[in-house]
Amino acid sequence: MMTEAAWRLSIFLLVFIAMAVWQTVKPARQAPLPRWRHWRGNLLLLLTAAATVRLIMPAGLAGVAIVADERQWGLFNQLDLFPSVTLILSCLILDFAIYWQHRWMHKFPLLWKLHKVHHADSQVDVSTGLRFHPIEIVLSLFYKAVWVLVFGMPVLAVLLFEIALNAFAIFNHANVRLTNKWEKYARFLVITQRLHRIHHSQKKSEMNSNFGFSLVWWDRLFSSYSAQASENDRQIKLGLRQSFDANKNADLFNMLKMPFAKK
Image 1: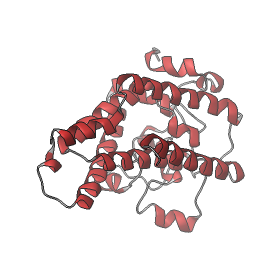
Image 2 (image 1 turned 120 degrees about the vertical axis):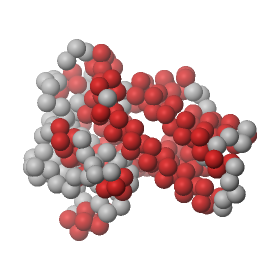
Image 3 (image 1 turned 90 degrees about the vertical axis):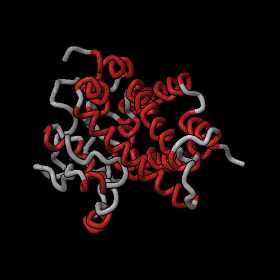
């Protein structure tokens, strides 16, 4: 029987490989750096963040959910709801929480210093969905843990949400483009690649839109939805306007120290 870690890794690899093949066969935009040079730094940053989280909270978010269940903490442990209802509500609440986390990462200067490591990548592709500073990942973990404890979310909901969050981060950062027909329908439900590239625009007004990682509903509900950039999808300038050398930007050490740089 597969463990929780095995399930997460298997689905992660499946989605990553599928989107990597797609963007290799039919890329939406030309890449300024060789794939391996670009991927190496982003994947090393992912491993660094994963190791940091493992040291700080070995049991992860699932462990928090187990503690909440054992001690009957949280709202859902006090209500007599159908398990399926609790599961769906928990996933929706966590997605709502991540939407606001993302907005706050852009709004507050100290948080932006961390999050700009993600936005500094001008070559947005599947690996960009994994490019987050370890401190940002740790803060996100504690932030989600509070929601899990307050609502008493079940372990299954936490696992399903974490798997979905990783999968969507890979999906909507991929250097691909849905056909106009599929794009039209998909963006009623989820954040597509075109919508998320607007979020990675160098223009601040566009960068401060489309904050959702999976569902597009929160952006529509809280007036942060942007359907079209000022330039077409092939011409949007991605990344940050500050001068970041492409090679240095792909280096692990430079990414780790970026939040502490003066500019």
